[in-house]
Image 1 (cartoon, rainbow over the protein chains, first blue to last red):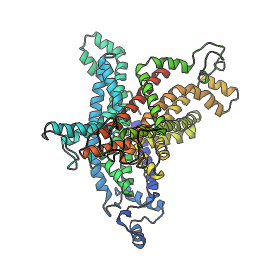
Image 2 (cartoon, rainbow over the protein chains, first blue to last red):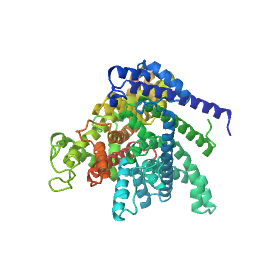
Image 3 (cartoon, each protein chain N blue to C red):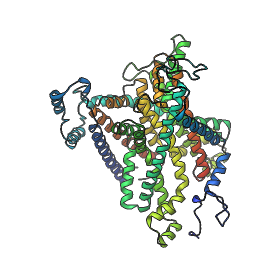
Length: 318
Length: 303
């Protein structure tokens, strides 16, 4: 199964990921450090005191020197310390937020794939019927309506109307109370986040299913007198999922992007919320740290998708 | 044979000038587009939107940025059909003005991406080798970071303002176009008409932009129309998060943000509703239009 070629391919991809992370982190590093203002503005530190602070955090050195010391720390898993909450180590902070975001993103992906594949299969099976038109329309609505609109409507309906109707007995609570939120708290953000990408999956699944339906082995299966359900789910779907897998990479990126907005709406203490806060607070080190984590995450996720590809479809070799 | 074929793309008034009777790419596509009800509806909506946007440049029912034209959180009335926002500004006026940002960002980004993506992609695909390797690496790097984050970082670097939003978003969505153009150039460069042009002594600029580009124009235009909703969506995300046009100027993302805080503060949902609906309808229309265009101009591509 795992051939030499596969290993070489994985190696090449890992090199590309490392290179990407390097370029991205340096780019972001250069960008945030060239911004006007600094993290100490809100403390009203000026003159000599500011110089001392800047020196303490190494911010008075040239950017390449600063980047080098960041890089030295980063390869040892140390992303430096926060400037806003002075001296707070970033790595544990970002890792905890990553786990929160991963929980949200994972739930959203389940929604995306579950909805997308189900709708896609249903639309393909009932091609050109009203079911098909309804589901493909929902798909277009899915990737047209911004996730913050869906989230806002969710808050309106479940957080307020339902609250008023049931006199506060049943309603959606927000913002989040704990770090990870309860299942109820998780539901709305996950759906709002997952719905967006599900549209693309629906279209892809539908197109792939229709394609597969044309093939000879499906006709053979039907000719054998196999139940339609089994033909669709066991014979057609398996092959139809191969092209669907190919858009999982962009889907994951879409979920990551959307999570930045969703986390800010629902007050979810994840990476996306931290990212926006760190920008507003001029907390450079955190911004760079979050970016680096994202770049690694997306690189690894894309690689994983490509490897899953070979498992689903043995014809694909690297 | 290959050289004798006129490129139908430049012909937008087929019939008069051509010796051979033929239907141009445009006319053929337009005919198919007209049969698509959904796309036609989308076009009508977009025309209305463009008119509203134009009108709002010169006239709005009330001053969109003046605080206190009516009561704060006023519900829709005859005087103020969409009500008023948290600062007592007329929602209809602000909604009209807000279309400017969305349309400007969408169209300008599509244009920039069209030019940059096509040039970069065609050059990579035509020359292959080192140029292709560098450009492909660049594309892969950009694919490796979440676009919204890059846009935010660039936006913060460049400073607030419409032009900077457009640049920041263009930098995050050019890759699809470049990849498409590259693929087209890779396959078209092997065709006979390119060989014929090369044999005829045409320089590379003439070959790439005079022979390859016109033949790849269908899918490129379709891709460009899909850039518009993506750009509008990204811009709405940016402004929603607070990285937008400077405050008094109305834009839909920022209005939705104000609306959401009003909603969470327990006020009526109208302030949120209008920009949300406008944004959703506009994105829907551009997507339906894009779908229609793709079916009309690029029939080989699967739905």
